[in-house]
Image 1: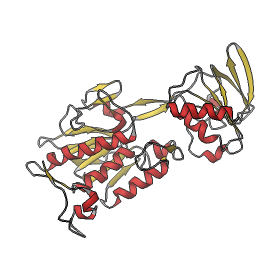
Image 2 (image 1 turned 45 degrees about the vertical axis):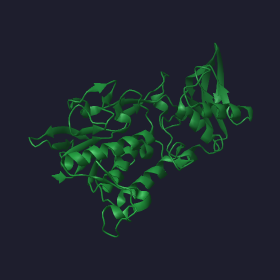
Image 3 (image 1 turned 180 degrees about the horizontal axis):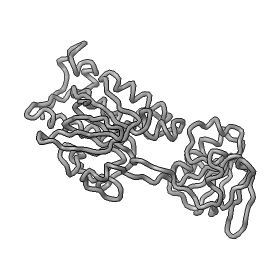
Image 4 (image 1 turned 180 degrees about the vertical axis):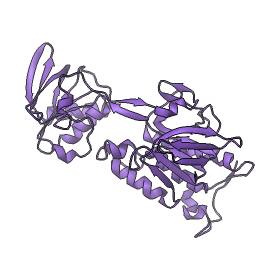
Length: 349
């Protein structure tokens, strides 16, 4: 039986940052993730994708963000159960929980934080004949290593942020980038749309709208695609076809835990992101509430507030002294290496 203060289900960015915030409160964390390594989608799907909206980082690769978060939380010695899926949960008479994985590993904690991102997921695939035949032969649904596309002819389909961002990123790597979207309007960030249109004018991106890829050509690997645009067919040479139509998320076994679910997400109270079951919280992309934004930085905020309530559950009746790392540093929180300066601003809850 693995015992901890906060059991975190999901080792993506939000789950990893929870380790740090909990550590400042002297709370221990253990994380469960079905993937074999921490980082969630940032590690598994797009480790080389640049992220632009992390405070203090004008640009950071998703894989590097994971490494930084692991380094930040390392001092608090979190535990990990990787390559196992959280399957069942049992609430004991004392209000604590036992979570068992699909491999039978049991975890005991007074607080459970679900930070499972989109849950289990699979890419949304276009309806193209023989699409599966070309998978891993030039058809990819995720970009893990952009160097694979160096000096190659790449066709990307989609109208969201991923399609726009990767078209921009690969414009300096691939020999030719073509972005195909079935509408003239895009769903992604306005800044990215403007950048794509700018690169089109510079001749670095071929932008084909409104249109869609209807056929893939090639004997063993992708050699070209047919694009249908306003009733006309355009045959285009290509080494890679990357349809980026988003992910189809599923909560998996968590959906059977008695939590209030809305549109495949867990409803929470925005006071502290607690679910309808006291002691179980949901933070990051896995939750939903009015005004919800599925951004990593929002997950960080939710994790911070969640830890405050977790402290009160784990230490009933105990007053928490809020200290600011800007004046106390991190070491000063546990007193093991130095005391916090007298000038520390304190707030008593």
